[in-house]
Image (cartoon, rainbow, N blue to C red; front, side):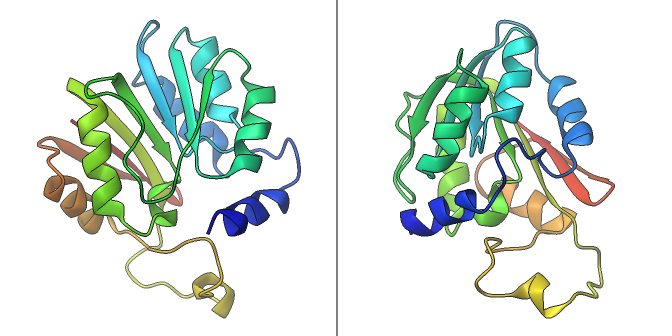
Length: 188
């Protein structure tokens, strides 16, 4: 699985702007404050970690793809970088973070419930999960490529299913809203 994740990142041009970057950055930065400990879970090339550092946050970047982390270390050199093992517990202490940012991550995860349970564990009491995921609408009219089983999206969420999985994993307060072609969620 690791080689596949690295292959996905090897196909992404260096310095490419993440999809819906401006809207997702605005959502993220509206929910963090200087000095907060933020886990950028599934950090990709570090674009959001760099923004968090600029906002004065203490940032830990984590990803399963070594190629993504290589790029992230260059783009956000002031952040700690941690290679994750897919399906394994997160290598962080309980209550380690004030905020966990999972921008366009959940749709790539085989065990979403397991990962969210781990996120709940590493968030301090009262901490917040901030997540975005693509929105596909009630009726998806898509090409075969959209649902290609070889694609890197393993699941698709609606606002209802995203709320449900967050509740199932112990998040008591959730807000999910549509933002253009994405869903933005805050949970604590």
